[in-house]
Amino acid sequence: MDPNVQLVASDFDTSLQDRLDYQQAVGSIMYAMLGTRPDLAHSISTLSKFCTNPSPDHAAAVKRVFRYWNKTLDVRITYGGSQNIAVQEALFKNTGTKDLANGLTGLFGFTDSDWAGDKDTRKSTSGFLFTLYGGAISWKSTKQSVVMTSSTEAEYITCSEVAKETL
Image (cartoon, rainbow, N blue to C red; front, top):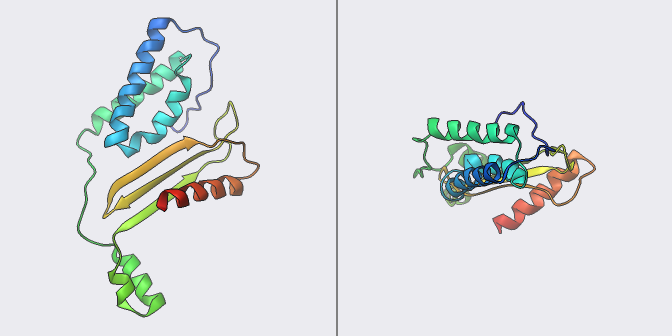
């Protein structure tokens, strides 16, 4: 999605056919995202909010995602057999033993959130990605259920959700 475009709810009255076309397009992107395309998770999280009344701006955003998808058809999730050497060296340096460094499974998690990124509800968006030997195995991007009063609180809630996923 274009990072410079902030999509908001529309007062535009959409025809039934346009609404169905939009919903089918979002569903097609969601199908790919669920199985093999974690890079589309944020786009789906954002675009699916407007399925009940999409505007021409929302349809243009969907078309942009399809253009991105078409240009990245050769992008795949791959799993390599090597471990992260930087992490191994840091563990060895801090523990003084190679046992812990050699026991890594290659599992890493990444998380982030924004603060009040949804212009309509002022709710934050959070997301995470877990990789195993460099290949994505679990991912999610979602709007948080409550309005946060600070960026620290938004990050804390995100880390709490990621901790649940880790377990």
